[in-house]
Length: 327
Image (cartoon, rainbow, N blue to C red; front, side):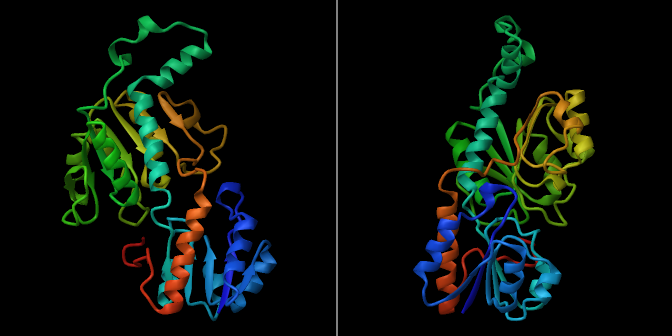
């Protein structure tokens, strides 16, 4: 069996450490590996690969990989793969679902606590060496997460991890997902379908986007969606930037319809220095780092290795992507 490992990235945290790649190969002397660290090595490896452990694959590359049977992406999102072409050729696809659930859930909690305790405002005053105690009144008065309503858009592994943690802090958690009649998730009080998005948003003090990007979710947060939200609510996006109309988001912040927003994904990355988001009021911008954490690659490699055993023995793969859903 020919296996290609090709996970080169401009972001070092998303690039497989060489030591881990070589340790994986050493554990499997029964397989033939190509560990590609250059474009040429990747092209050569695709020509013979039956299995590809990668994060990206174009339609052109697929035509150069006649023996390919299975692609496992080191990421959760699959929009960097030519999913339609892979499906049409019968190539199976799996992802690394769940590995980022806890770090992203903790990131969201950090943002919720920051907004509720007025941390962005207080940091502004700190930079000015200004004692702001008397200013912590009215809309600047800290508020409790306990008793507030958190709305989750997406109830996958990230949504589940966040729901459990938010419920433990006393929040009422509601959620929207593709199939509202799906399995019960601990900590979630009510589940809405796609048609009821605006009804859900009107109840929420904070809204978190943690859904995959699909044709159904692209652009779902537009002017109407932000208008449906409770005035003064908080918006957090750890999903995908293309799910949100950035102009509509900035308008909602400027008007005060939203009291704050936290964004970890952007219409262009890196976000250009001239982009108005940098100067938008009450926004916390993090450079797509919500999933960063120590030990990430240990778990990513473990998921791939388990699926490799499953693939070789003909057992069902964990986290196999459903092409009709797009995730």
